[in-house]
Length: 100
Image 1 (tube, rainbow, N blue to C red):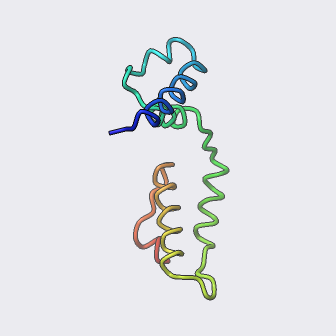
Image 2: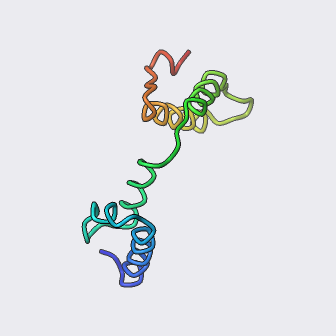
């Protein structure tokens, strides 16, 4: 349940996003679409994910080491985030790759 203020902010954000699009693209969204749904769709369609950035991410992943004094939980959280991102880019990492 959204408050009236939050609902108004969502409507303004959603309207701004929709008004920046071609009419044909606007028609793909329902009247009940939230600004988050519209933004997520736009990001998935138009966010550039280059082979170079994926290669750099893979290189950083394999070169990553636990730093002296760094919390193991913090390090693992970062590694899991990179693993998830690489999987979304089509480069899934198995458990063996995570520990090697």
